[in-house]
Image (cartoon, rainbow, N blue to C red; front, side, top):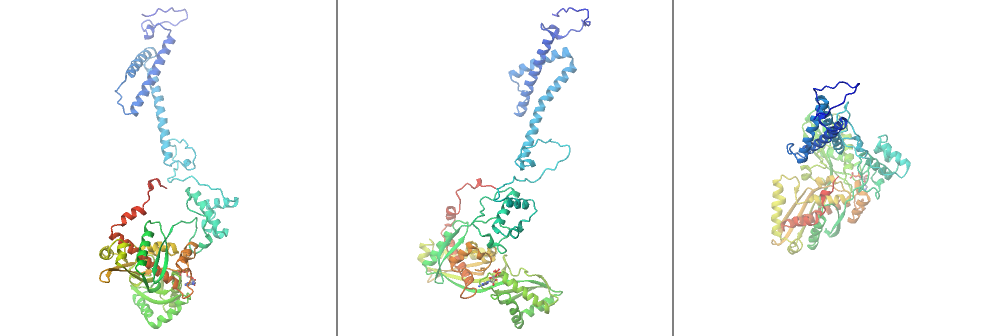
Length: 578
Ligand code: ADP
């Protein structure tokens, strides 16, 4: 029922033909409006929240609960009242605003989420310094430069003095070149320490685990390694005694391959029990082959003929041998490719592996030849016909460094008791694997089971150049039944064992200790080159032991079992990451 309202003298005239829904309520007008507004906003908020949840949870919007149904009815009632009292335009604008506000919350959350995602991906430069992620607009007004690569947080270890701290900073800032630290400071250990700290700060990567202490950095200066920041530790195992040419050798092997030392040791045991091995040095000569070019192939051929003339060879030898009292030219082997001549000089080098020595001799000869062949253009002191640290048939056929053959006769009962196989099985396996299998594979000097395993391990332990393992591991392993088919004759022929006992890494304390163990440390006092030649023979003898043991294991079907036992970590490697 419409309520009768008393109209005072000053009141505006009522419109009796336009009644409002609120007129029907028994409450005062302001209270009624407040009630409907409160109902409208709270129900609106409730419904929008529910709606948002449904969208997030992928729940269909038409699935409505009882509370949502009640809320919808209340909303409808409040809208009808408000339209009746305030008009449609006002209610529309209120609905639009409350809707907008509710979704603004969602937008902000989205924005924050995206920024956090970006920061996890390292897109924000602030994260690289470990700072809080700055809130940046999603669509910036001006394009900002976003660093593509992640710059890690600096790792800072306090330096022992203010001066060192300043030098580290100068290296980090690029004001002092890292390579100049040794010469500037005059202290190799300090230089390595400062370089290491600068490296950690620049990269943000820790070098913890790579030792710095306990190494003589002066000993590598200008000879073994530039810009040191520490040293890698490799365990050294011992195989032996290797009975070779009547002498026992305990062979040091630096390796991280489980089973290798144990296997070589078993081979040594079999050789020892059978009376030992015999090693013979066939050749001793390091090579270097420059490439020179002429205007015509005819002129290149003229130099070839000149060098092959015995009279000229004598003169050339004298010139070459001036490079060192240990250098003795053994021969020259020429090869022509059109106008280009490759001259492979071959020289004994005493106890040095000899690359430097031979290169010096070659330079002497090239300078000398320039007098008679002024049109000769020296393209390079090394023309790859040498051939150093690359697989090449020339080394396999002609030899490089020391060429050695090593043999042993393994008695029938030793093959059975120590090697757990039999002679026939070994001979057959060698024929089908090391000879036929390698032929089918197109092998170049690889007619063996694993010569490079032993060569590398002995090379690293004794300070040889491990890169020369490539040609030094050339090896053909032969096996034959002898003594009426009862015993096994095994041999390894290795034409390119490149070793030295002076120069390079051989003078470093650890490597020198290993050479000392073998009795071949430094220069031979009896005869120049005797230590290096003996070392090459020991390498071949060790390879013989390694071949014998691995081939026996394969013949007996053992190697996989041994590898799983000795060469496989039980640790969970998936947890080790950079
Ligand atoms: P490589 O030629 O193997 O690279 P180096 O350049 O260090 O080695 O040369 C070896 C150095 O050692 C030469 O300076 C040489 O005079 C010296 N030396 C001393 N004793 C001997 C030796 N018995 N055999 C070879 N070189 C020796």
